[in-house]
Length: 145
Image 1: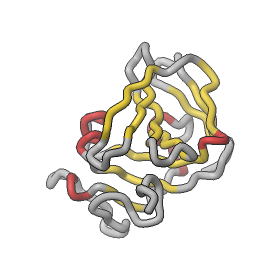
Image 2: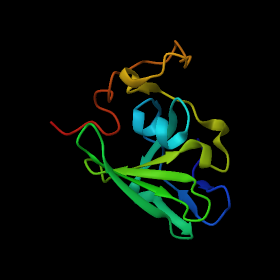
Image 3: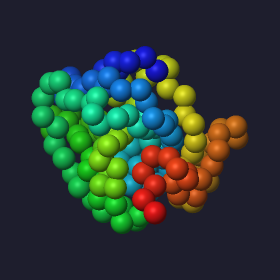
Image 4: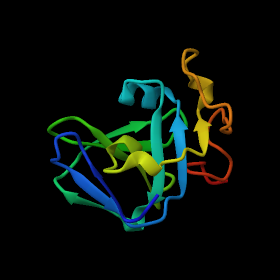
């Protein structure tokens, strides 16, 4: 994906940019992402926090403790409710952008399906992508050992 990447919410009240090279692209099938997205999974792109910034508006934050024990802070537009990005307490160096909020999401290439232990039986996953019951080893938000 080209950098810098820009994106924003449905109504345009909150916008962001990321100048760092993406770290990891994934499709998350955890129940929280299913509920948040209203679908079978959420497409996420992990980028370095140092190169990420909100350029317009102020997102509303929602913090929830995930099944992993990590505090997950989700950022939404306070006007239209669009979920934009999230941060996980164990990896403050990364921001997870919701791919659908990118101005140009066409270059996204997922590298794995994660939390497939919660995947819905009616969801057809790409058989060519690696599947992980939870977090893939050495990627994204794996708790430090």
